[in-house]
Length: 150
Image (tube, rainbow, N blue to C red; front, top):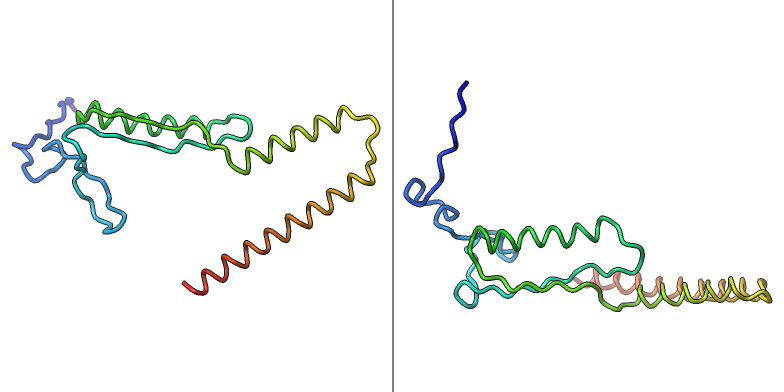
């Protein structure tokens, strides 16, 4: 069979097709319907995206975040001809980062200290685990209560 190039979809060949008219449609999560994207200022789009909170070794999931949003940005600018000012943050200080830094610091101190009282260390770890469990159970109870009231 001979190959024929695809027929371009244009507003003249498909007048009811919003993409052929150069419109970008986005799903409105409130209505569940696709609606035309209308920037606040002509063809200028300001876009901020939260990036991953990286608190451990880098992995492919981190790259996926940046790659996915970069592809969308390129579609906005190259295909739909929007002038995009794009900002994505790298990380944010949160409890996980602080906890990991504290753990790393304590492990390093433990490795360097030759006079460690391991019985006392084990007791302190049990106390910390008990506090963490109590905090987790309180948080779980609050969530369950909020769900019952919703």
